Amino acid sequence: MKRQFKGLLAIVILVLVATAIFPLPVMAAPVVGTVSPALVVNDIENVITITGSGFDATSIVTIGLNATVSSSFDSGSGNLLATIPVGFQVGIYNVTVTNGDNSTFTKNSALTVVEPAATSAPTAVPPTAMPTAIPTAVPPTATTTLNPFSRPQIMINTYSLSVGSVRYGQDFVLNMSLDNAGSSTAYGIKVTFTSTDLLMLKNGGVVVAGDLGVIGKANFGQAMTAASSLSGESRISVEMDVSYYDVLGVAYSDKFTLIFPVASTGSGSNLPASSATPTGIHRPQLVVTAYQTDADPLQPGVTFTLNMTVKNAGNVPAKGITMIIGGGSSGSASGTPSGGVSGGSGEFTNFAPVGSSNIQSLGDLQPGASLPAIQKLVVNVSTTPGAYPMKITFSYQDNLGNPVNDDQVITLLVYNLPTLDVSFYQPVGTLTAGQPNTLPLQVISLGKRNVVLGKMKVEASAGDVVNGEGLVGSLDPGAYFTLDAQVMPYGPGSLDLNITIEYTDDFNQVRSITKTLTVDVAEMSMEPTPDMSAPGGKSQVSSGPESFWQKLWRFLLGLFGLDSGSAVSTPAPLEPTQIQIPIIHPGGGKG
Image (cartoon, rainbow, N blue to C red; front, side, top):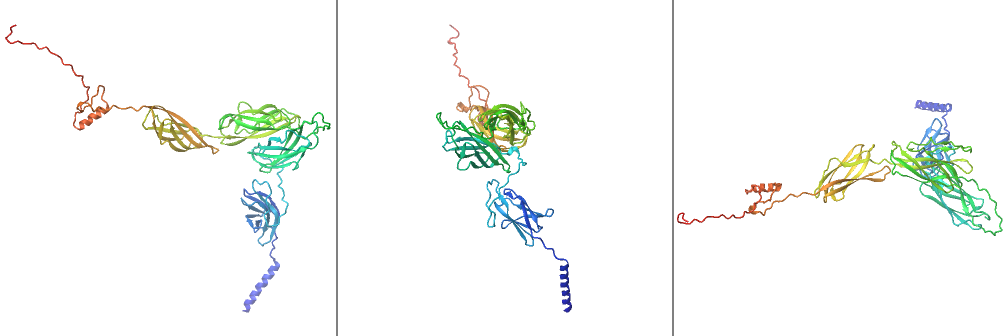
């Protein structure tokens, strides 16, 4: 027993000595430095990077109070990678890192989760302490570019005044309607009005118009009043600045100049005339307000004419307008007019100019005026069905001779509709009225790709159709579908067969193909019936060859042992003939 106690005591002493010589390492407490990105959208899965110190493979990341998310430790950089799942609740969250030794660190308000179309900051998630100020998301710098095919473009739809003309001392309201001529939604639209002649009432001249998609209008009003007497003025101007963002946060801004009429003060007025004051920058702005094609729908290999309406939405004339289909530029950025036009670097993969180049001269355009623009194009045979944006550049000079390039984007829809042949797969000849006749119909796909067709229906203009419907289904190029319908015409003549085939096009719209086939219908022939009223039970036929019914009748008579001889014409009765008989007198030859 003593020996066992001495052995145990020796082991304890060895452990204490080893601990003193080789102390256990102490793990450092985690410290969170930054969380990147600090703002995520909850419609997709996001991975955030947590930088700091003291992280290891046992570190756990918690978002908010108790939302533990999947995380991993990057031994190379010493950072933590955490995954924010799709649909995470919108809000502002603390980010907490906890190590395996239960040491922890919390970064307050480190992560903001928003919805895809959120225009305001989300509400902080209680009950953790959050700062009251919510940092505003900084839009990307100018180096971040967006595909020009998907940018928003704000333009003025209409505007009007609540009064006929501006008069000093009278308040009025400017009614404004904005439109989005681009191909993506404009977010966070802010409109600012400035003028040296007018005062902005109620809101200081700043209007938040919200978001505007490619469909719809943004309508609002701005109250104003004249700042001083407008004696001697016939019109005044107001500068309107519009700023907005696209879905990626890229910032855009546009400037418009509005002109208002001024009420006449009369010739006897003693008020001093105000001096003319420059009112900011004046410039033209060309926009495509409407466009259409003469071919509908557009398909691969189709040549069509694009008709557009171009409007000068600015306040000064646009001189020497050059339209460049596919995008390009004209002039130089130095301010010196240049005659060079660059239009060869445009996009012509799906649409190419035909009959003329992609560059046209449109002349001059006054403010508020419109002019037509026409370009003949062809759809490339290799173009697949879809919606294709087309960039159009308008190059011109402003009133100071400076070159200006306005880029516009329109969208053209390309379809690939089925090409079918509807006919008979064998001759039908002449149909018989009042009797069922077979219609050997077939549908052949003549296109270059597989097509899926719906119901095929056969109708007759003057007859009843049986088995006249069928589901066609998928047809490969050159494949066929047959339908053996039957029709019973009402009468002789020409009979129209109307064949309709339904299908769904590339944009999920229901369409149909109609074909009319014409066939001839003859009167049904009738065979003569035997006359059983003849004497002796025999059929009496006046004359001519013996018919099928006559032969059948004689066969039936033969079965019953009756006279089955051929029927002959009944001869006409003969008139009696009188014969003179000489008189013989008795007496032996004496006279």
